[in-house]
Amino acid sequence: MKSVVITAVNTQDARFQLKPGEGVDAIHTNPQYAYAVTLLHTDATLNGVGLALTLGAGTEMVCDAIQVLAQPLVGREIEELMADFGQVFRQIADHPQLRWLGPHKGVVHLALASLTNACFDLWAKTRGVPLWKLLVDLSPDAILALLDLSYLEDVLRPEDVIHLLRREAIHRHEREPILTQGYPGYDTSIGWFHYSDDQVRENARRAVDAGFLAMKLKVGAPDTARDIRRAMLVRNAAGADVQIMLDANQQWTLPVALRTCLELMAMQPYWIEEPTHPDDVLAHQTLARAIAPVKVAAGEHIPHRVLFKNYMQAGAAHFIQVDCTRVGGISEFITVSLLARRFNLPVVPHVGDMGQIHQHLVLFNRVALGHETVFLEYIPHLRDYFRHPAIVDGGVYRPPQEPGSSSDLLD
Image (cartoon, rainbow, N blue to C red; front, side, top):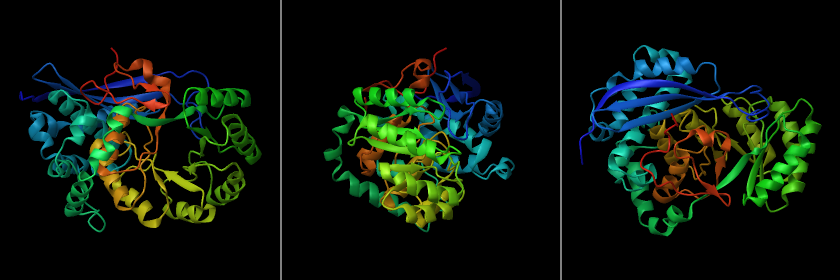
């Protein structure tokens, strides 16, 4: 295998204008989908590409942080780097000055996500395989070396990781058909907050016709009656057999969430997503207990493994929506997925990458970690900007075959 050395790190502030109504929820009323992009240049013809999602303004700050945090990567050979990436990750995350700006959240952690994702992309390209194949073929020791388990020793030790991976390897052949069959998706784009009732109804029917067995509606209106009406509208349009998720995007206070979720239970939502502030673990715990058996999903704005640990310990979320463009990249995504496996919780990622990287990671989670197959969010609004856009056919993500993490943007 040819040695590939990182020679320089550049960034790109990539912003994309959405069509009217796209991406709008109860909180984010004027989004502009954007990426803080890391570009790892090498002494070969290969480049590593990493993504961290933003909503436009502030992307330049993440790019600036990437340049500062990237210094430990320059001059490193990619195989040597990834053989001990967990230590490198911790070194960068605990930058002696920038850590004060987090720790492990906000602009600096988004920058780490972009850098980490670029390293994994370059690693897979160097080996000439898609990211999912690189990950599922790694030994337990090699996976452990990618991770920073600090602050998790009370629930997840290195020996626990090795034991889990070896245990799951025994039956992985039973799960490997998903590598050819693909991973089921769910359609988020049917019910953006400002879409009219007629548009939501038509989108729901179109999603069913396209093969989706699950879809999501944005809620969180000041008028609860609007949320209830639109939720029933989607249920009637999609039918009783389709799973429907409701997403409040942190809009509700706990008292409002308690009242509104109880009213929404009549349409049998599959989950209630981000019902209140993402740092308020106890509010999520209270709500989860009050609305059972309806389940709570969270993770889109949970920035690091320690807070995810707290959610799991408290029984505050039933679906773990970790996002590799929000936490510290693919490395921390794997750590959170291992935590979720320890707590017997399913991982259903939020796709801040628009499904490009996460289509690889759900395959790894299923095959190597033994996670149950649920579904992966599908948001198609940026697919035309990627060199190798995710292929979703019949409501199913088809496993990508090109080397890398599917993160390359068109020039």
